[in-house]
Length: 334
Ligand SMILES: NC(=O)c1ccc[n+]([C@@H]2O[C@H](COP(=O)([O-])OP(=O)(O)OC[C@H]3O[C@@H](n4cnc5c(N)ncnc54)[C@H](OP(=O)(O)O)[C@@H]3O)[C@@H](O)[C@H]2O)c1
Image (cartoon, rainbow, N blue to C red; front, top):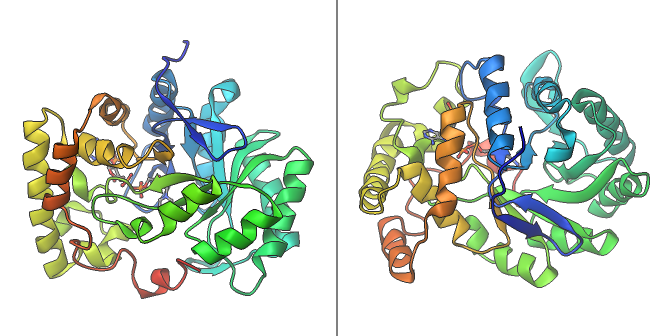
C-alpha cells in the first residue's frame, strides 16, 4: 500500500525531513502497562500508511525489545521511514530499574552496532544521545557520533534533554539536527530559552510526550486506571493531590476541544504544532485508531485568539508536580 502524503517539516538545516507528526514507539514495549505485539505492529503500519515517517525508539526501551519490534515492523518498508533511536541510558541487566549514563566514545560505537542489528538496518536516520553523560565531555561523545555519520551508519545526529550550553558545544563538533525534549501543554520548559537557542543555531525540535504521557487526552481519570507496573504511578504528576489538580487542567482542555470539534488529544497536538514549523511532536500510541486521531490534529487550525485562550486555560507552570521523580530530574538539562 502506498503511503498518503501529509505535511512534512524540516529538522535542522542539513536536510533532515520528517512528517509533521511522528510516532513514539516506547509504550509498545514498556512503561505504560501491558501491550500486544500484533497490535503495536499494526499501529506502526497504519502510521506509515497515513504518511507518518518518523518512528521514535531507543535501545533502553524494553530494554532492547522496542528496537527489535520496530525492526520487525519496518521490514520491507525501510524506505518509508525516518528511523530515530537513542543510546546512552544503560540499564542494569540484573535490575533494569537501575540505570547509568554512558557517553564514552567506545560505548557510542558499540551501542550503535547493537541498534543497527536489532533494527535490521544499515543506517539510522537520526541517532540521539538519550541523556548527557556528565562524566564524558560532550565533544568526545559527539565526536564519536560524527565518526558514525562519516562511516554511513548514521545520517543525522541529535541530543535529548541537553542544556543550551551543552548543545552549543556539541554543535561546534558536528551539526546537531534535532533536540528531543518533553514539550506539551503541561510541560513548557523548552520555552525558557531552549526553543529560541535552537532557532538561532538552526536545530530542529522534537517534542516528546506531547500528550502529557496520556493525561492530556482525558482518558485517565483515576490513578487506578493505570496498571500496577505502569511507570506513571511513580511520576509526581500522577500522584495524590497533584493528580486531582491536574484533572482540572484536563477539564479545561476538554472544554476547548469540544468547541473546536476535536478531541483533547488533537487539541494538545495542534497546540504543539502551532508553536513553530520547526517542531515535530511524536505522540506515542499502541492503537491504530489513535494514530488516525492523532494525525487528524494536522487539520486543526488554531487562530491567535484560540492560542491565547488555550494559554489561559493551561498557563505555563500550571501542572502540579515535577515531570520526573527526583532521580529523573537529575539527568535532564545537563
Ligand atoms: N527522549 C526521552 O527521554 C523520551 C522520554 C519519553 C518518551 N519519549 C518518546 O516520546 C514518545 C511519546 O511520548 P510518550 O509515549 O511518553 O507520551 P505521550 O505521547 O504524551 O502519550 C502517550 C500515552 O497517550 C495515550 N494516547 C495516545 N494517543 C491517544 C489518543 N488519541 N487518545 C487517548 N490516549 C492516547 C497512549 O496510550 P495507548 O498506547 O494505549 O494508545 C499512551 O499511554 C515515546 O513513545 C518515546 O518514543 C522520549
